[in-house]
Image: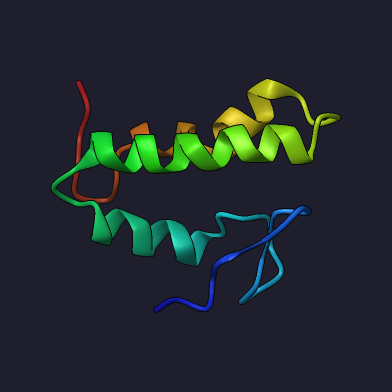
Length: 81
């Protein structure tokens, strides 16, 4: 079990106090969902909905990038054409 879980309603990381998901949690999630990228996006999408309710002052685009947008980025050994 990770110590890098979200602290709500501020959405900081419980392990390192960075905005959640922090770089460590992102690495963990990539590994956990390596064979299921759509499931990862759905999982994080649910957190995105909750975060928009907790932080209505935050621009929607910024929250999308923070919670879901990074899942489409190529990892060090991946390439999206």
